[in-house]
Picture (cartoon, rainbow, N blue to C red):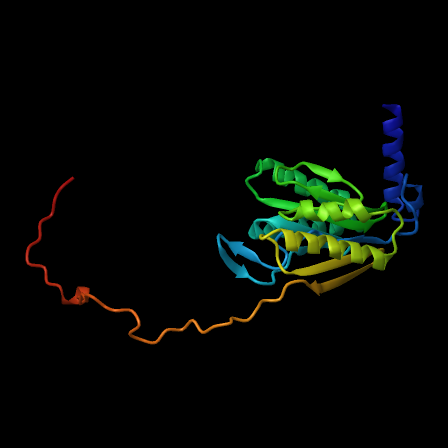
Length: 260
């Protein structure tokens, strides 16, 4: 307990110093790290309502903070409004503390919110960003459980994408090499899953800089119809007609009021 109190005291002193003693934080390097990450777009290019495609090119990489982005699979409305809420809370936290928010703070907000609803909010999320502790990458499941791994996938095409990552991922990859790996993993999910979209989006988060590629690559183009499916008037034979009488033409001849 004395060690915990000492650590807490040192942390309070560093916070009071207003950034001058930032290097006194344990495990907080002065220089940032490059961090490349992207979400496997299980429904990357579009979202559906049942069997109807509602949007052919919807946004699935959501803004949380200047240094944090979150990708969503599952119900598009749930992922959109859940990330909006956490983004608002992270901005309030930044104004209150006067410092850039940490990825772990957004993770805690997301997991507590989703756990409260026991999975009824269908938001499967990939959270990533760069803060004073370096790069961080998490998965957040709809029930609130989380993982921290070097590479993660979520969504209906996640198994196909994970097979690509497990085969080709290695430490200390160059940025272009990592982009190609992420692109190939998402393409595997698109091609092997009917519920996935048709384009690849990538967001690169570096220390103090964010670069968005939308689209990074279009995998499947919508084909042109080969035939004409318009039929001339009269193609369908009308066997019976019924004339519709408007309500204004009806006359009340008898009226009876019944008591309950």
